[in-house]
Amino acid sequence: RYQNSYDEFISLQNNNACGIYTDTGPILLAVNPFKSDDKGILYGKETKEKYRDEGERRWQRGESGDGDQENGSSLPPHVYAVADRTFRTMVTRMYHKDFDYSCKRSQHSTPNDNQQTKREKTNQSVLVSGESGAGKTVTTKLLMGYLAELSERPQENTKLSVNMSIERRVLESNPIMESFGNARTVRNDNSSRFGKYIEMNFSSTPFSSPTNQTEEAKISLVGASVETYLLEKVRLVHQSIGERNYHIFYELFSLKRGVDSYVQDGNDNIHDKVEIEGNDETSQIANESNASLVDKFGLLNYDMEDFRMISNSDTYDRRDGVSDFDTFRDLKRAMNIMGFTKPEQNAVLGVTAALLHASNVTFHEIGEVECALDMDNPHLSYLVDLLGITKEDLNKALCYYEIVVGRGASGEENHFRELSQSQAEKGVEALIKATYGALFQYLVGRINASISGSDTTDGNVSNRGHGKSSNVGRKSRDSNKKEASIGILDIFGFESFEVNSFEQLCINYCNEALQQQFNRFVLRNEQEEYHREGISWS
View 1 (cartoon, helix red, strand yellow):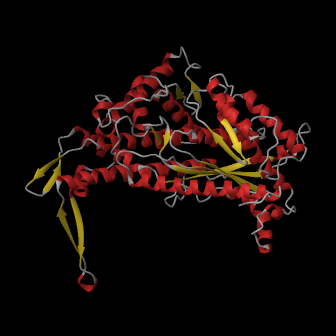
View 2 (cartoon, rainbow, N blue to C red):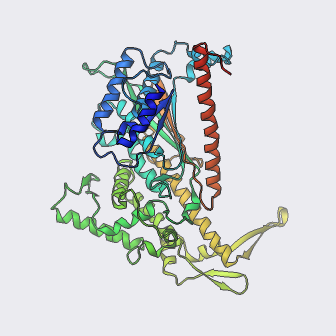
View 3 (tube, rainbow, N blue to C red):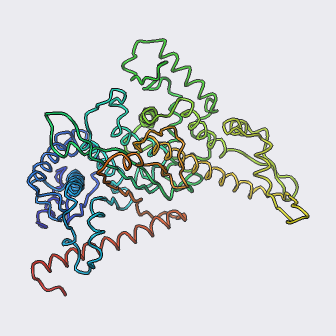
């Protein structure tokens, strides 16, 4: 078996798409082919159906669903096989809760753990790890897409269109997360600069359709949640040569390219540009709307090269051939599907544009220590207008700090001390990081409110600093008897720069810990295999 896996790796040299995967026990190993699957050989509909049919066949025969390491499949290793096995293992255990899985446990387990084991093993998890550029982001999207499609059910309520189904909304969260959380690095053009944990919640939902009575059809995706951590904020103020800031800052300039591919009519219906071709009136409205936003955001007389925030690395494009215009179109479509109103979308983009202008604000010295904002800087006017603040308040916040003296009956006294120009400039960097971090958490909270499966989709969610909605999954827990979840952890990649930030130190440390866990897991599985076959372990 391992010789065959080795041959599959070697076959990559012969452009055999399936050769990018092999496995060891339940662990799938992948090699990034660094090319698109335009013909659908590796991830197309036909390939997906093969793994779905194989999983269904083996599940009906009772061969998958016990979590065995040997998958016994006639198909080669694939990310779809991992997703299918994970889903069917969860389904089997949802419908066979009385089965005692404690026999699968290590001999070191205690009898007291058995009752807890039955309940815990219903939920499943998939860990996606690897160095930067290994393909973790794409793999995570493939897992989510397969699981969502496997559990997708026919719409019974006409109020919930296909475009707004929970499966569609879960998948449409990806363009938003990528625009605001991904960037080009030296090794990867679409590197996730944050870690995320996606929990997909499933529940039994019986259907009255007489043509489909299998138990698989009764398992539906009822909600999901996203939790993020360690957003790389230092990238906002510094990028190495050959790297970019977050994609959204470059996508924003797509507004200057005329009519967007997606516009809205008066009824908030989404139309493709092809559908309205020839409708001069609608195109003119879209052009006027874009022109108004470009002027409001202060981008009319500026290009990317004019903003320090995205010009210090002298890198403006992507090497993978992906257009910022296309990803911006996908972002706007996703925000529409996720329930962002037009004013909310413009507000999010406005804050993004404000940070570009913030990177260009300047100061002038007053005496030996004191400094003040350059009130004649045109970028300052755009910054305060977009953030809804005044120049005076911003000058007070950046150029002075407050000291509170005294307590008790005598009361408190507030004293303001001057900051030097270099300290004020550091304050601007801190402002950019804090504002973007808050914006990112707001977006994650809105996404969670939309995909939670509950009726509360107005965005009033409590993030608690983690980007996770407090009401995620509440409806499914309350209204469905059977429930389980599949968690997908997309861990950021190991990477080493000339100057490594504190965030990168945390990322690399986390990856080292995961590598040790991986080593222990593989060795333990091998030890158990030796024990089952009666081979002495030494």
